[in-house]
Length: 212
Image (cartoon, rainbow, N blue to C red; front, side, top):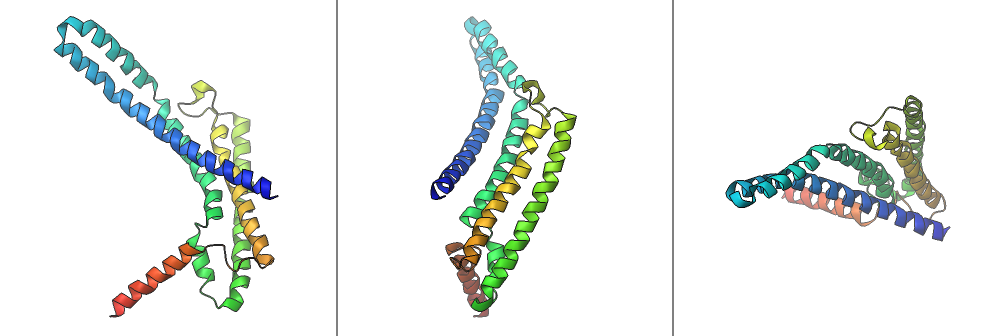
C-alpha cells in the first residue's frame, strides 16, 4: 500500500508540473510568434538588399502565429485539468485551512468528532459531484461535440471535461485517507499542521496589536 501511495503521489506531482510547464511553453510560444514577425518586417524595410528574404521569413512566422489560435483553447483546457488535479493534491498537502480552523475551534475532546463530521460532509460532496459530473461527461460523449479550436486535432469536449469527475473522485480518495487516519486515532483534525498553526498565530498577533 505504501508503494502504491508513493507512486500515486509522484504521478500527481509529475502531472501538476507537466501541466504548468505545458501552459507556460504554449503561452510563451504564442507570444513569441505574435511579436517576432514584426521584427523581420522591420529588418526587410531597413535592409533593401535582403527585404525579400526578411519578408518571406516574416510571412512564415505570421502564418504560424495565425494558425496558433488553438493555443488559447489548449491553455484553458490544461488550466482546467490543473485545477482538478490540484484539488486532490491540495487535500494531500493540507490546503483546506478554513475547514481545519473550524474544527480547531472546538475543545480537544470534541475535535475528533467534528473532524469526522467535516470529513463526512466533504466525502458526501465529492461523491455527489463525481456522480453529477460523470453524467455530464456521459452526455457530452454521446453528443460527440468537438472542442472549440481543438476539434481539428480530434479533441472532443468530453476529452477535456472528463477531468472533472476524475478530479472529484481523486479528492474523495484523499479525504477517505484522512477519514481512516482520524478513525484510527493517527491524527486529530483534518491533517493540517504548520499552516493552521501559523494562521492562528498570525490572527492572534494581529488581535494583540489591535488591542494595544
